[in-house]
Image (tube, rainbow, N blue to C red; front, side, top):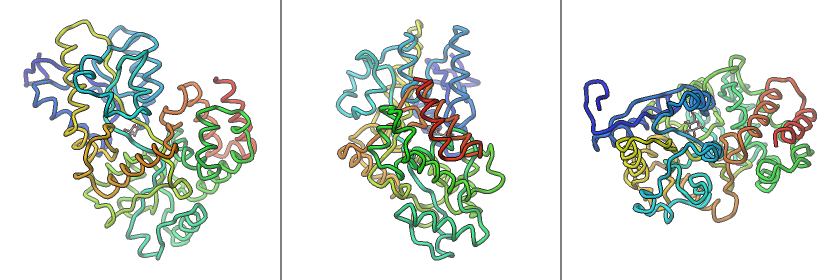
Length: 402
Ligand code: GAL
């Protein structure tokens, strides 16, 4: 089989949404790993952070009876596709490689369906991070904030200096990504679970949720006038080039800083959204393999799954991507300070029961509920509702989508 000029034993056609500089750099680690095993890569990129456009494209491909070999997928979406009987089973490679011993239960809940392995987890990302430009903080004498109020004061100091306080991209998934953490700052991890995992309607419409929306209003006051529709990696670029001081985004943002040659602790800081310390809202990128009849394609899928789950690959890929390994037995040797901190905090949160699936990235509830939450959060962030109305709308929208 040939991809362009190179002829390989087999190819994998991979649908994904990793199109930013940092994402593409990480993906190259996978492409090269497969090429070294004589497996060709047929690229099927669908731009759009968070993956919504990619999932729309996937549905069209599957409906047309032409599913790709492998697909980047998140959380409950994997379960939805498995329920439709479209995914192949990876039990042979999973058993041969002992995945069950090294993949945390929290991830297995999404990698397996009906007891069968249907996806290979490549990483664990988390969403409740702050990325800060160190030079701006030093210039303005701002210490790393450790409470919500300190964070708001820091944002105000930056804004008063004439710089953009919060670099943000006005897209529903990005607003929702911030909301993951803001809900924890307002009510703590137990409230997050009540609202987004248990879908407790009273919690969703409560005074605590009103407070969460009040805090989104506060953040809204610190973005620049051109935020609407901006891609997430362009907001990262504002912090990288010193136009903005802070970005609230998942640790895929770190991939952009590294791709720009920036060094953690020297050029930028990474810390949990103040008020969420001790909690981790996670999402894991997984590659789900569609059920294919061709033996070569099946063999290529198994080889890709084995590659993704190899300890050396899990280190090499995540060092570049900004996430941490899905496997629990990968040493942190090659990771920078942010990566090391991410690995420790993930293990501690898992231990403490404060490791929770990200609502914004499909690890807390099904797509219908996630999208209903997106609609209310972004409508509020764009001024359509006040905080009280937003909490009311949220409870109604979730109830309607359940
Ligand atoms: C997330 C995905 C990450 C990341 C981000 C921005 O949903 O899990 O890997 O790249 O979207 O595109």
